[in-house]
Image (cartoon, rainbow, N blue to C red; front, side, top):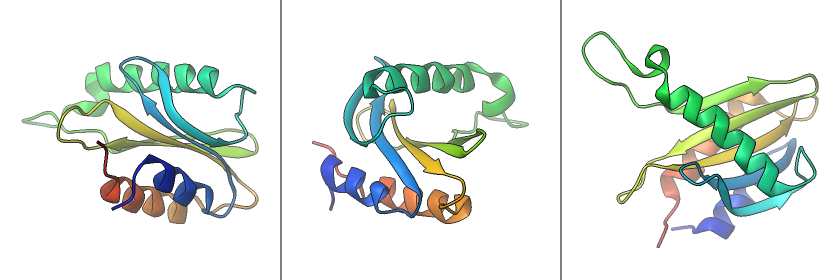
Length: 127
């Protein structure tokens, strides 16, 4: 079972990956990062990703179905030359972690990257 380093390395092995960070969105801190940062600093990118995650989590539009609350799985942001995939991580102790992947649009495949992130987060062992 892979830990944080293996998870980030696996994310960076995705074709087109420019950066990967494991972020605690309750605090806005990056628990680990690899690659370049879209802002030049991984801490700034983690804080900005946290703002986006909190907005989505607090929105009833994205989290409520007809009869119950539905957990968010991921957030995808499309930018000029890149995609940002933010995958929520289910943990036994707290569901406040996300894996943020910065993906080059020309070199990456959004669907394949999304499925790979799902597999990486499902296998991730924290502790």
